[in-house]
Image (cartoon, rainbow, N blue to C red; front, top):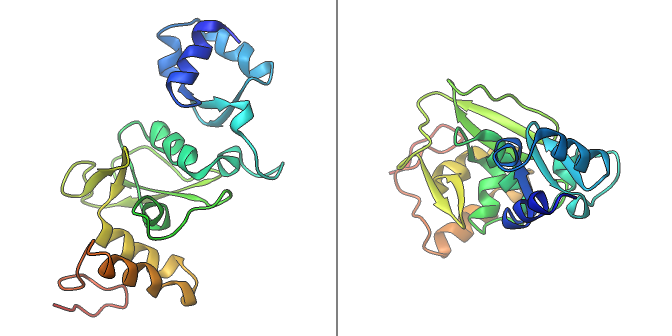
Length: 189
């Protein structure tokens, strides 16, 4: 791999976007790295070092990454127009351990031009702004607020796993149950 591109990938923790690469190397350099098996395209215009792509062959490349790298890749693809949400946000909040192979959930405003792809589910939300108080930065990642993530995750989790993140969040003093819009429609306050 070209030494300048290698340094850029290392600075990005194994990840590089097409836009960032084009600022320092010609397009053919990135194409060559992909062709030689040194980089793998995991999402449009988002590439990772090939040695970081594990998991089972045949699965989407994004799903074969360590969850933290997969989250960073999805956010890089969103280009500031999305935030980790649903069960992906619960992982960042430390309430549900993410695993290799998990789909990445990303919420975007309805005006964003992002669509669901292999390995990532895009949730378009009316009125969502990718700015506080709608989203926060946690562990360097843009995520939906905890309360929203808990509510959004409720129907996505198996019934026997739904209560545990809520209980952990309340017991860990991350939130309180008053004032939420609960997924089953009742308002508790």
